[in-house]
Length: 102
Image (cartoon, rainbow, N blue to C red):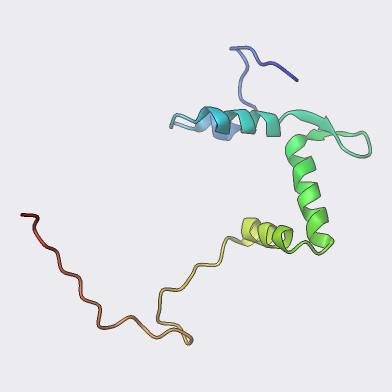
């Protein structure tokens, strides 16, 4: 396992530009994903690429969960309609009442 020193700089611009404080586990995962690795041909790559390749491979093998993940990541998740589509009529008759606490 590779240990990082305090002078280690994150490999991605996303981490460097992040104005928000990142959670420790998120930063550890980002660092691990950008760590150098070797692909099946022995060529250098990032661990992130190896994971993406495995996800696509599983999708091509018919894994429905992998297929859904690939499309959700590539196209974005399909929003769930609340109402007003052909299948769902618009919401009506809804009354919201705010009551001041005693």
